Length: 400
Image 1 (cartoon, rainbow, N blue to C red):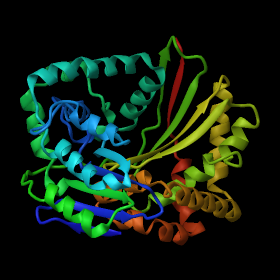
Image 2 (cartoon, rainbow, N blue to C red):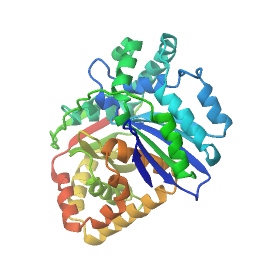
Image 3 (cartoon, helix red, strand yellow):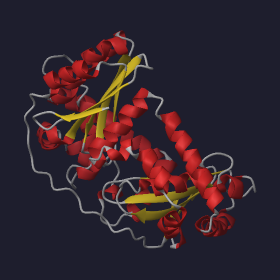
């Protein structure tokens, strides 16, 4: 894999895959909802919408049509710590993909007409999220779990902020965060590395934009144990969530990914065996959310036996921290095989590399994953997961 910085600071990564007949070109930006302030909640996501409404050289819809005519796909996503745009095309159109996505990301045309076209769409997304009990529940969970970190605010923002955005707000946010040193071009697929690099250099190497970004403070990995309830008339079966706040994402994420594998990977997992097979819950799963300014780990249980489930989870986590070495090695093996399988996809590889270089700013987060996984020893793993014995934040979603 080639990793190289352009003279202006844009990072490039090219993973040549001759076993594929396609190419994924993705552009990652180190900004998302976590980089907003109280006046701009929701602007990172709204900006993603605006980016598809015409550029300096192409009218609205042109790039989408070009990609579709070539048999490909174009899309984007906004998270807390990053925003990314991608194009998937048959491999013979790799150079075209670079040209189109550079036009989309580097030369957007912000107009009042497009702002007023997109605003009702984004407001409708916010309104729909308020009709979804699971979304309300998870937003409340994040708000309760984080006391200072920006993850306590929804990625979509609020009706009040989204309704107030002006064209200048978008231009200011774009110029502050869509700067070369915060951009990664990640490519995986059937390409000629040096040839495609020259195309990247031609299309991304001229942009000159700089700004000073003060990143949010990291929140301490400590949870205030409390219980909250969310009531909604659309809830059919109660949901329980148990959450712990963890240190910021790092190469030590592998410990928590092993824990996730141990708890909820397949029918042999602990949550499946202890809650699903025993009839206590209809479903149960865990989730490790790796975030820049403080990560978290959670267990979700869908059940109509709320009090019994609370007791079962308490016993279950005690069992997990005293897990046998054989069970630990089995969870490692499942994680290893799952990652191998996941990397067969060019799109998944481009995403994983883009995340490593943009959010983590560490290629080894991707390159040395298997080495890091192999080096995790049983004793250290048990020390790292001892947080499970701390009293968690507990949330209950139930019918109103």
